Amino acid sequence: MATQQRISIHGQWSNRLAFILAATGSAVGLGNIWKFPYITGMNGGGAFVLVYLLCILCIGLPLLMAETMLGRRGRQSPINTMAALTAEEGGSPIWAWVGWLGVLAGFLILSYYSVIAGWALAYVFRAASGMFTGLNAEGINTIFATFVSDPERLLAWHSIFMVMTMIVVARGVQAGLEKAVRYMMPSLFIILILLVMYASTTGYFEAGFDFMFTPDFSKLTWEGVLVAMGHAFFTLSLGMGAIMMYGSYLPNGVSIAKTSLVIVSADTTVALLAGMAIFPIVFAHGLEPASGAGLIFKTLPIAFGQMDAGVLIGTLFFVLLVFAAWSSSISLIEPAVAWLVENHGISRVSASVYLGVSSWFLGIASILSFNYWEHIKLHGRTIFDWLDHLTANIMLPLGGLLIALFAGWVVSVKSSYEEMDNGRRGYALWLFLLRIVTPVAVILIFLNVSGLLDWI
Ligand code: PFF
Image (tube, rainbow, N blue to C red; front, side, top):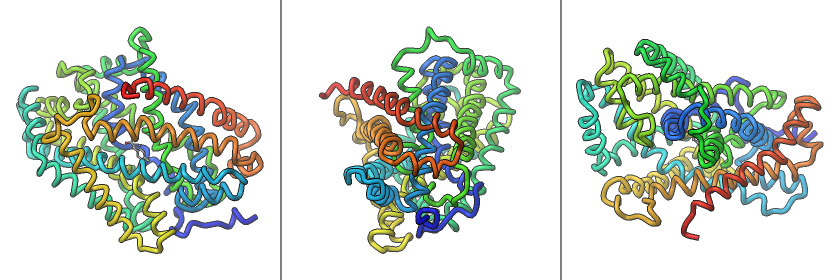
């Protein structure tokens, strides 16, 4: 059978573990360690976490399997994979645009993701230099305010992070991505476990644990349910082709259901570990769990500045954040690089440089949103806010909805059954979740987002 022999021109993962590490590296990022704790804090804890976990299981898992399945069948960049599968399955050529939407989303996300990752990079050195030692909330706030008000400084760290991303992507699947994630992912787990162990000595571990795992539904709004659903989506890198791209490097014969389960468990474990490391520290130092997006940069350093071994723990924490962001950023740009290599015959190095530099350039707009252009707002949002909103709240759900519809309804049952190879029952459950549950849930997210768009 033709599809069984197909191999991506960009190479292949050497084994199942390499794919698991890479996809987990893509999924685990700023979303888990920076975003998950703060949205959990803002949405009251336990009940929000419970809904998030349900969404991961009912929406995230089937979609992750679908993207991997499509990628392995198409064996090309998401744009060309969608086009090839559409031709094969007899669908409308319009489906190929899903690939384009994803490439655009990845490019846009990378521009601001690199800026925030640059903050994390800068904070590695701030933590290591002992800058936070003995400071109170005000002092820490001043450090953060001074930092983000200096565009040249932000630009320097953004540039360094973008170069780090370009280097790994330029080296390619085997030499670059695979080698990078092989070391990044295990270190990530070790550092997180060390941090949780530290958190357990604060005397507030139980408080943190209760906050995260004792559901209080009176604290959860319908809006919070939708935020949980949206985050399940973002945290697994779904809806833009990153997982489809990594799936295209997956050797045949590897079980998609089993590997997806491992990836989802690893991603969820990291988010929960991050919460379990952060909340005890937050409570031990009387900090506010609902302090918003600045939770890590504005609040955590207070704890690092007050605790014994704070320099070491703080440095480790930000190193972990940079590693997590790094292995995610490479997956944001990989689909576009693969497409440029496939369609324009240029080298990986040139493709990475073109895309990295243009995304870096766009990132300057996000940098200026925190200082010179802080007051330039459209409907209450800065350029940075708009980029984040447009990609995370609109483009990813739209892409995911289309991918679910394509994999569930356009790809024939024969093709997907053969590719999934997970038994009759497992397959039937997957198909039901993908055809019905996922689209309905994504449409709900989308309706919510459009309801929030007061500019219509
Ligand atoms: N999943 C990443 C995170 O949680 O930080 C973000 C992300 C990476 C989203 C890659 C989308 C993507 F394609």
